[in-house]
Image 1 (cartoon, rainbow, N blue to C red):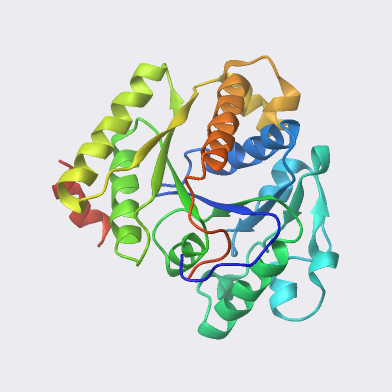
Image 2 (tube, rainbow, N blue to C red):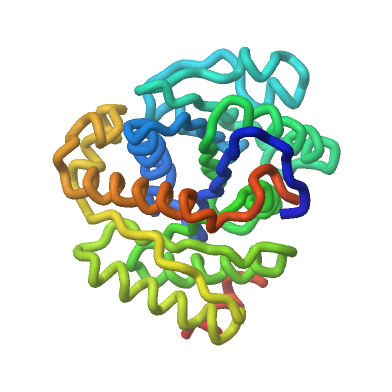
Length: 278
């Protein structure tokens, strides 16, 4: 991390990303935030899919302002933050605003400054990035202490997750990846996907991503999305809910162990990756 903060209380920042869209990333981010809140964390979610934000839709809440309004100096941070279930705070993203899908240098500097202020609002910040390897994804990932990379057992998801790891690992200080596998039939399947990605990363990228966990395929997840209710509230005893609580426990354990870097915003192409991951 290029820049540390002198703070009495440490704020952990996690970027949650994926190579392929449609892997359930945003839904897991939302429920992970709730699980962390249940465990006593003060959590804030940043919707960093700036052109197609939808966390507010999953939460079923309305907001007046978004990060677009903060960057345009039309509102303050306090005015833009909204409170969701269990006190989780959300900084929403605009939807259908194409010019925000590629931040310019000035906008990135304002976002960097914004993250210092966000650290006063929570002890854990989850950044829900867009999918893929756009410049925005690279930038928001660079602000995090650690990158949580999500994939599913689908071959295209595995390939795109590797491609994302490849691109991000080229950035200074970006070699700390934790892999979580969604929509698995069993933990064994999840670990098989993880081992596939780890072997490719070790061989071609010379990095060793860590196992973070898995979330089971669960029809209750889809039902929860349609009801605009987090699965931890919709079906708290479901397999997926138990898996997400396990992810939260893993995250907190890694924080307690001091595995992250100093807290604070720090500062190839998928087709080519297919040949490498084979």
